[in-house]
Length: 388
Image 1 (tube, rainbow, N blue to C red):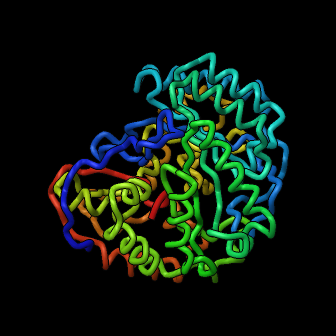
Image 2: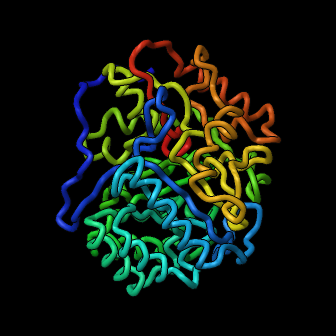
């Protein structure tokens, strides 16, 4: 368990000369309510992508997917749900893929969000296709949404050589240039970094890069060997070693670094040590969390998209009906027994992997044994795959 550190309220807004609104983000909620504090719909309208990353969890890179009419209708239905249950700007419309910047109707999406003015916008991108025209459009939307735009850029190393181990040579500088442009425009940027054996020694250097790029948050993501990345299962590092390395940075870091690592296990354990909460389980299957794939099937999240865990299909049912079915159709199958605290720091998606191998199970046992403790404080649930 992390050694005690001084308790206090961490700032959620980080001051920066080029920042309008720069917030960190933690996917969390009360375990008793089983509904996210901030609702979050993740949409992959197409799996088409300009890169062929070795660790990709997607089943294919088929460019076919949802039509613009489907996406705009989905946004409007999601807006109605969010406004009714969380109020204006109480929910996120998160566009990913594949690569969302390949979508022919990206302008339509941004324009509709600006018209609605009810949803925050997230986009996960590799940044390679991000030119000044894209940055200007994001900047305009960010102004309309009063800083409610957060762009997540996937970079897996602090230099081109390390990033290229997964993403190919020559893509690092393009992604970094996009990050700089987005930040100069005053739009909040997060960085996603998938940790594997090939970049394990690069974690500290990547944190330094994130600071230099003025990123609001770094999500060190657990490598889950699935989809096209299943063949790379040998590259999965020991999760306990990953935790210890990030935890060492968090413990000796100042407020800026700890804010950068918001949502990490170190951050969560700090809140527990201060009596703020006790972690109960990951948020998989909770109300307010949806992941929709190109054929219209809705799951709870990208790591819980296995057969039998569907909540419905947007071509067959209204989004409100799908959302209402989430607890009954998904959470009931993946819930953690209330008296079982052993895997409360585990991602349900990893545990549900059909070919979840003894290798994965061994990882779970190691890290759970190290982190687990009982507690009687207010229970909270987090996404434990979003940021180690």
